[in-house]
Image (cartoon, rainbow, N blue to C red; front, side, top):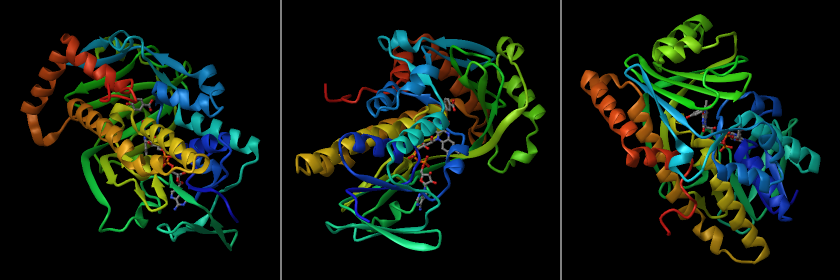
Length: 396
Ligand code: FAS
Ligand code: PHB
């Protein structure tokens, strides 16, 4: 088989890249390890920056988010049992974030690709990359017990943190930066009305962090900080709802509508960056290159901006016969990646209980939150990072 771009991974990064390349007339094949059902079964992100919504529209996949996405103009911060609004859109000259689940984004992209009849191999085993430093790299994989091979010009490694692509960057070239946090998040999805339909709520309590989000006006998404050693089986629905109420302010706690969980999972939190994001004809995008703690709602959005830069660079490579874009891809992405890493680390450090810093650490967090909610300058800093810094930030 022959194609222009082989894309490893059919998560949001791989599917969005495939859609943008196809729109520009660039042939691409996606190779995915799991089944479509498995990919759709992973409940993850829920907040889209405007640049991500615009990219979905640009790729011809905007109708879902336009019809069912919920714009958010505000986030609320809870600490010392009180809730404070951060008027995000006022502080950023009208910018908003949109609540629309990654599951729905992935489903929209999958449906779009299938309707176009583009080639995707799901349930692909033993995926491997070859000759990535040559002008004719290849991807091999097994499908239904038969070994197959794709010759291409460029390879996009969109295969997430545990994928195969990053491992093909030589260890003497790859630099990795990592911080693993001493706790995880237990997340619950439930078909109940969101407790706060007009604001995402972030709570710092001495019992730990809590987050109130949504997928629609009838489906809610909640998270609690929990010990890394916890198992989902230790968290009954009743225990989860009781603990969430203890971490919110009294008014919101009283408003909480509870119900049976339809999904419940625990995720570890880490900050991670791999540099460079390109080696030879291999280009990493999304979680294959970087991970952020979900506190800042940046993971999916960073993947989207990587794909924006990568699709532009690949289109320039094939249509203008210029390698300028692909040569600058890694540096261009990493500047934005590190800004999002910093913000996600900062908000995680501010909102979570760190046992090792004790009561003093809790008081310092509360003092910083007290300063933040009364300082237009620091509230604006939070708001402009939360909606996503402008793509040309720092070049003005
Ligand atoms: P993905 O991991 O989504 O997709 C990679 C794809 O590659 C997968 O389908 C995988 O099966 C496939 N793959 C892996 N190895 C392969 C191989 N060898 N061959 C072929 N295919 C292979 N972000 C937020 O903004 N908010 C959140 O609340 C949030 N929660 C998260 C919870 C969890 C448990 C995780 C893991 C991540 C969470 N994220 C969150 C981040 C998440 O949304 C990612 O940023 C997003 O999935 C990135 O998309 P991709 O880069 O496409 O990677
Ligand atoms: C979500 O809705 O899943 C979500 C919202 C905000 C975050 C993280 C996750 O910071």
